[in-house]
Length: 298
Image 1 (tube, rainbow, N blue to C red):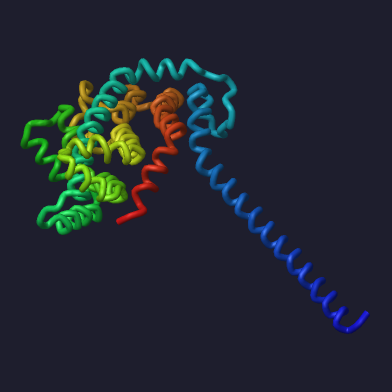
Image 2 (image 1 turned 120 degrees about the vertical axis):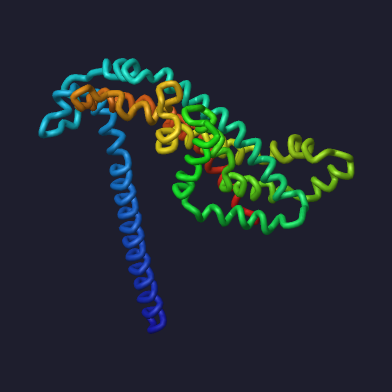
């Protein structure tokens, strides 16, 4: 074997060793990644697991000094007791009413505003849109006191109006839908105007169907926000006739001595969490596609 052939063989062996080492490193990195994701998944899912098993325990077992990770006696009756004790039927209806009405009105405002900023030309449009975006940097908690004083001055305390009106306008949703509308070619709008189509008809027939994934995402997010709201409903409408589901669960399972029936309370939390879990499980693709479609063109 010549000298050159020996060198070629040695180089081939070095390449094989290098590729084998790279495979080992890549395998280690992949294994570490999967291990990290597995651990993080356990951390995220454990509270839900604990909620479910706690809702199936007896109160005596729940109060044991050493917790059990599976109920000794499964108490499905906790769920029926939770539904009747907290009057979940009325709470569900109140929350659905506020969520549906606020979502529909918010969609109308969001669609019209996004269309104006995306297609119409008027003086100061960019300045106004920039000012709206700037308000997104202000924490919503700063408006709580002023909104409360306004609601009280208008006489809307302990009404559904106080739960709906203050949150009809969302700058984030307007921005999200406006970005989606900007992806629709302007030539379609100009052609429609040449044919004599009105702005509202063009919006209804062309832009809304093309932006439907984003509108579905906004609808889902708005309904979830109404379902999860806690602080504002507690401030302005915490009476039994207008109480939402998050506030209704707060003290529904506490007796006169201040002792809470935690398994029944956990069962109620599981019942309330189930609709949100199912919505995200079956409609998550609409949320992802709606958000991703809105971030391509500025």
